[in-house]
Structures are given as C-alpha cells and as structure tokens.
Length: 93
Image (cartoon, rainbow, N blue to C red; front, side, top):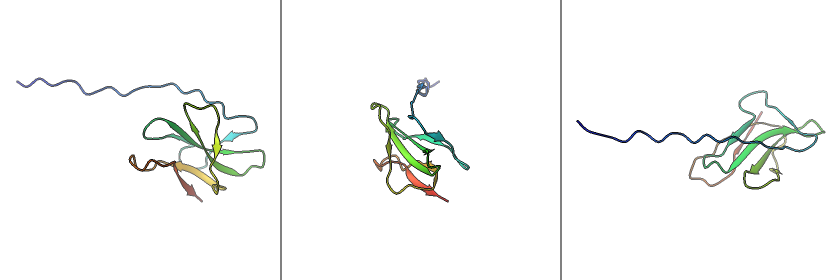
C-alpha cells in the first residue's frame, strides 16, 4: 500500500473592492471581472458616467484602479497565459 499526501486545498480569499463613484460593472457576455492567475490583480469591465465600457485593472495590494488605454467598447476581460506577466487581454465586440 502506498501512502500519499492529500492534494493541497485551494486558497479561498474574500475580496472587497471599491470601484469608485460613477462606475457601473457589467458585461453582456462572459465574466465582468477576473482575478489574474497569480492572484495579485483584478481586471474588470466597467462603464463610467459616459456609458462606454472600458477595461480597468487593480492590484489587490493597492487602493487605486487604473483604466487600460485603448479598451473602449471592451465587453469582457480574458486571462493571459500564466507565465506571460501581463494584464488581461482585451476582448472586444
């Protein structure tokens, strides 16, 4: 009989994020927000007061979100490959 260790349990983390005033989360297809593969960044689609959806990112160790340039009309974030070291890629309509 062979003894093995049980597989590691997934880490569960509660995330409370303030997206700021005049921001409305929403995606008509796919996820509205995704966590980066390394768990350090949240990428999400939001609409500002102008109603145009854009892709935003926020490092979980920082309080501020940043809009990713050139992401107007984005409708869902998508996860990059684990080893790419980049933000989410843009998925447009």
